[in-house]
Image (cartoon, rainbow, N blue to C red; front, side, top):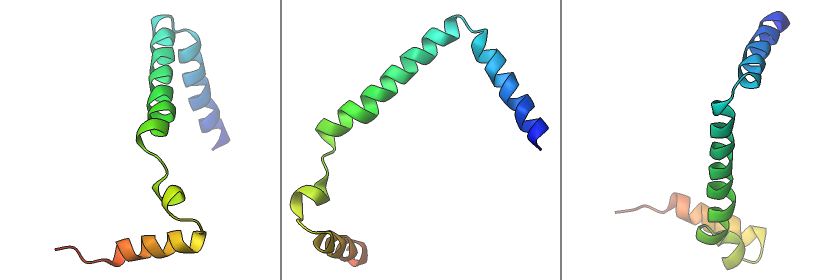
Length: 72
């Protein structure tokens, strides 16, 4: 089993090591993901529960009510 994992690791390691254009593309992808998940999350997705409820108990009660509330 460890031999199989070792071969898979070497396959990907050698592939990424010998990249030229692909390395630049991966850097661009990582930068975009960083922007999407870190920066946009801060501005567009605030922590609703933390800002509207003071205690953990109040947060859990609200979540329970929202989960069990029947919608029409």
